[in-house]
Amino acid sequence: MLETMKKYIRYASKWRIFFSVAILVCPSGIWAQDHEFKHYERDTLIAAAKELMETSRYCALITLDNSGHPQARTMDPFSPGEDMVVWLGTNVNSRKVREIRNDSRVTLYYEDPDGGGYVVIKGNGYLMDDPEILRKYWKVEWDEFYPDKSATYTLIKVIPKELEIIYYKYGITGSSRTWEVPLIEF
Image (cartoon, rainbow, N blue to C red; front, side, top):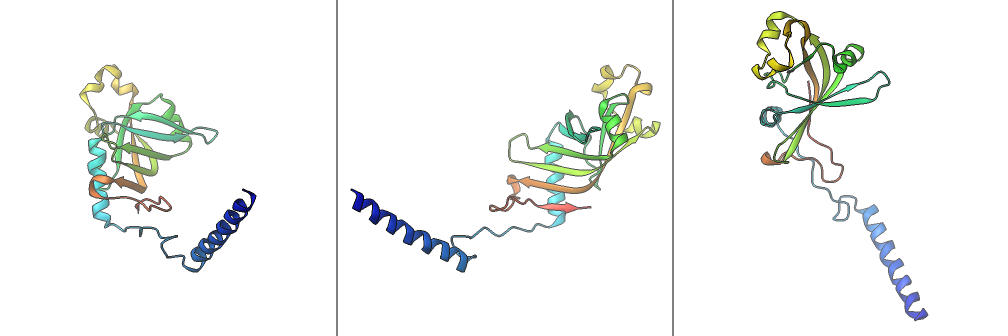
């Protein structure tokens, strides 16, 4: 039995050396091969992102608290504009408003309801209290949450800097090796 184990170790060592050399010599060979990272047209990614965002009823808004720790909460956003700007309604006294006043960096996360992808928007959030804009971005179903709408309702305008998307419905995927995802910069 001891002799059999010694043969196995010598055999395994030879194969380990072979595979190590093959990977070093042939980095683009079958042992290190990755599917090419696909590059998508900007318009294709934006159209797919808008569709996924409109299909998702809710998104997560992530802000940073005073210690720099991310804070996430569910939001009921308006559909993105042509420029991918997203509007969100909230209470002027909410924690998210205080956090955006302190640090305008925000992230929005939308998940495909069917589990087939997601959109992440990184950007800056700005508080808007113009009465005309407040009237434009209002949902009737919010009436019960804002009995004194004029005193408590405000808007967050998220201006994107980056957008990441995975959407299997249209074959939009990332690298199988690094998981890098398609990215758009604004």
